[in-house]
Image 1 (cartoon, helix red, strand yellow):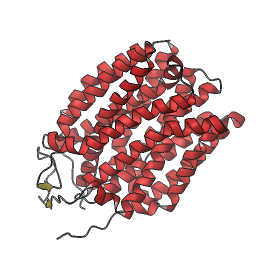
Image 2: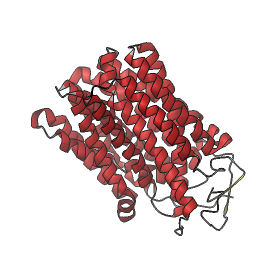
Image 3: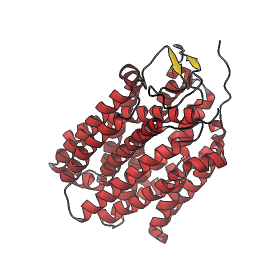
Amino acid sequence: MPKQTFTDSSRRWFTGIFVLFFIRGFVYASWASQNPAIKDLLSLDNTQMGVYAMVFAAGSIAGVMIAGRIVGRFGSRNTSYVTYFLFCLGLVALGVTVYDQNALLAFALTALVGLPIGTADFDNNLEATEINRVSGRNRVPSLHAGFSFGLLGGSAFASLLLAQNISIAVHFAWVGIVLIVVSLASSALIPRINGYETKQRKTSSLDTGAIELAHIALPHDSKVTQLTAWRQRRSLMIVFIAFAIIFSEGAASIWLPVALVEEGWSQSAAVFCYTVFAVGATTVRLFGNRIADALGRRRVVNFSAVIAAFGIGLFMLSPLIGLEYLAAVVWSIGNAIGLAMCVAAMGDDPRMTSARMSMLWNTVYFANLIIGPAIGIMSEFVGLYWAFSLPLVLMLAILFVSKAVETEKLTARI
């Protein structure tokens, strides 16, 4: 596909999606950084904490399951307005509930926060694949860098507040209220007609004339469903890669601070180590476009798998050898842009993008669903550090299916 030139209006589109990725990363990091405090305030053991993490993912899965229909009916911009408002407001309510030590309501609110986050995640990545396709370059990694910046900012802000003994209720209130305003402004930058299901879809969904293309019409195929995607071997291999990468990253965000606190670190120090993880991922994602263009998707995925596995191994041995910060950096580098390669690969065929993206994000949140209980239960038998062998094995398994992310050769359909 020939490269297209971004004009001012298309840059605003890119910026809006970038900031929305940032907001989700900031909210997620704020929540994950407070997991040790949540565990303590709600008096949860490791298994119960695993179930709590699963509740968030369950809500997100529900959000992804309905996302395609919501975006198709109401459009990306309207979907963004509503979902970001709901989960930012939900974060405020969650902080108050946890501070009051109401475990039952905290579990329910966590699921309700996860639901609009899942829908927003699907919507933003659908926009990312469109930007990627119409620009003719690998732009998904740089958009995912927005999420990483959010993780970095959210964890750093949490670490600062924890060092000042600011309560979780105040922390979540500040974050939620400020980000509601920012999200509304960013959502307004999404082109008005984006996301709506139509019978004729053009290669650019911009209604602003930001990208001038050849007006190549793509037939809307009503027979393409998620089931169609699930029957494709290539799609199955791609979602396995995404599953492994998300399982690895989720293990770090949920359990890395908890493991360090159990090892005797202060909560603020443990969160700072996770901040180091976010710095590593952010740095790589900043250069992700160039890395992907230079190496190609398959090599990126292979290198990611090996580097992440090495980082996880270092962290597992850190109670004996130290090097927690080095392990966090290596682990994060390996996890940084592999998922972006999966997102880009799922968008190769515009006719299949929506179905494949639904498939992908259902799998991503299924991974998030089982990270908590899988590692939590395993830790009761072998200890928390050795439970990280699960993501290590999954990352190495990627090497056997990485061919799937190579650019798909499209054939005409009659």
